[in-house]
Image (cartoon, rainbow, N blue to C red):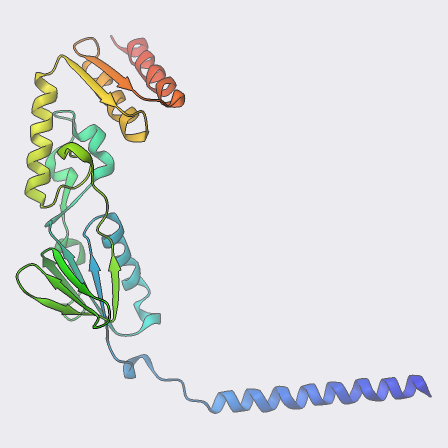
Length: 238
């Protein structure tokens, strides 16, 4: 008797589950989801035209079909993207042409219409989070639905390992640095991190015994890497 009751309860529970399944499925099917075309266009403002800002803009556009209508406004004080990761090689005269280190930002978004993308050459000067506005140089104010801060970082001493404001300022600083490298007999690099070790290795590889390259740092690994690169060069040098 007990077994029969348990089986009856089980069958009843399954029936209830099936009933509620079809009830909820049919209910949610009747709910009309808004089409992407009916959604209000969102305005996304990105401050910064380097790795983070540019790559984020491209990634958002790739997902635009899922997000809905949007416009991206990219604000940057530089007309060109600076390939700063290559700067340790770029400081060595003759290694990389300016055309490889600097690429125009706007050209990278040429396939998007003016309704989808706008590039503004300016600097952000003020921000009102409550009103969702950004004040930029030239007196213009931008309204936004979403704001992305990608203004990046800077180096000390006006060195061209990072962008230095405008494209012209960065390019001039790079050329001045290359000129100093050419004239120098001894080059001291303070810092044995990734940038310091790579810069020291590029300089040592390029000049060999012509110039003395000194790497100063607390990192034992950095000194080992530089020493191995230096020894490798003289092992293969003619």
